[in-house]
Length: 84
Image (cartoon, rainbow, N blue to C red; front, side, top):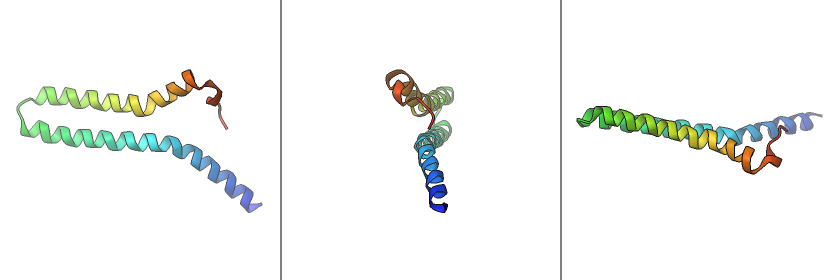
């Protein structure tokens, strides 16, 4: 009884872990982008341009790592688009 409960919880955790990798990687990448922005912003004279590049890069990271995998499943793999 305890094993069955533990295995069901474990399978749910591993299923949600797949999406957690994308979320974590996008968060880490966004942090690296903004740390690089801080260095470039205070070291050079192109402050507005560096802000625009950092904002666009952060938006593209979120689109690529969070939105596009779900869009790929919806469009190209509709048989995998269901809840377990």
